[in-house]
Length: 629
Image (tube, rainbow, N blue to C red):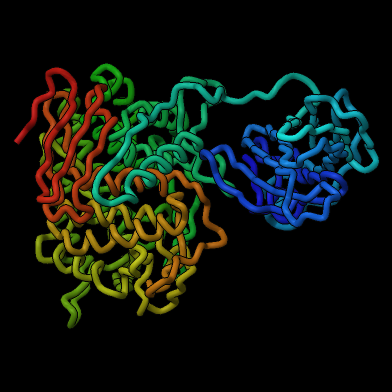
């Protein structure tokens, strides 16, 4: 990846530089033309992995105030930068061009913590410069080769002659070692995600979907030992590796773009499943849970998401034989759930004496219901126990996890070991609305009853939770509320999207529409590239959302959430094994008419249009796919 300011020059300050595999291979790349730095006039993203910077300067001695040299820099995340000079002067210009280069070969974690250290000394190497230390090597090569290279200053020089209207270019390539070529995924390589498009009355939907798909493709990683298997990095710049729970959640939200990403993610994580005392668990890191709860292990969430993703991917068109490949892994996940529950009703925390979390029970319930459906479909035993336990959990949860108050009550965030309920209002409860898909367009029963669901919808639609930019992670009136708290008040895009989809599916379209419009407004302010979170400050007239300094942008779950936000409006409920697809559009048509093309159902292109009246029509579908009731 490459991190730049809008000035275009890489100065080596802060996080600036080119990175490869978590190491900064070039921290400084400063261009001077005729002894001066160009004046920056524009910086913009061309694609998720390419940026363009434009600067100008006045090189003629005719006294005119007009710039007559345009300096254009195109920077690519793979370590390539092209510098182009274009003359607008009326006579030939002879210009010296200098590029000052440097690096510290520091790890990203050290750079982020301010411990990068000084630049390393350079040596002349071929048509460029090279840096070496115990941490590794980095080489910059130039085309055309420079006329002079000064290693002590890290400087490459050229003398260019520019006729009127003429152009000259230099291409720099940085690689992390002194031999071989850049080992990058080909820019034209086939993506596991379909290039879906959106059109309609709201002009924001097309750039949002385009950018989300582009970001997801840019975050795609290949398993080094199994290069055909693709999964998503958690986000850039902070978490460039695999986060199992988030990779599964993102793959699940992108099922309308095809099942290939789900396939690669399932295969990658199936290879990590534990054996022995913790058999069935898919390992994951611990995650901070905010000021009210201790950290918890995302391994539980990942283990419960695995059978859910498999069950839903099967409905979207993952082949029967492919699904059977993962059945043993899914069965071990469900066996782990059964063992962890034991003779009790609830799934306990990842360590003894921890609280019983509401969010964990929601994940477990969904895994049990969808897992039972998956096992029955393949003639495997175990579905009866899962359904029976899910029924017992629903009955107990509605009583044990509901906090009565004058406002109508609310679900508890957790139950303490002593039975005390933690009653603060938090966005983790959105997973109570996420019941997944079962059969031909029907939804699984939820942990809450109808009255409790209606109350939760009312709370999510109130000003304490709906910031105007999306759903706050903690209610604004709660103790320890912090608009920048990642679990204490900031808007997390993933949770907002799950809330929109869940509320719309449950029939609470007013609340869903308000959150949807809030996230779309925030997306527009962020150039349609959604960060994983931003401040939960209340929305004011003419204001823009405040970015969170620690947020990844792009982030896998945020980009995938953009896909979910738009596709949930059509309410696509596929059942590929039965050869049917059901549409349950949001009747209120909160964004007016919307058309989605280039989706994938049962491995074939799928297009749908929802009218301003909330009526859906399939415009393209695979042969033999029938519209269900």
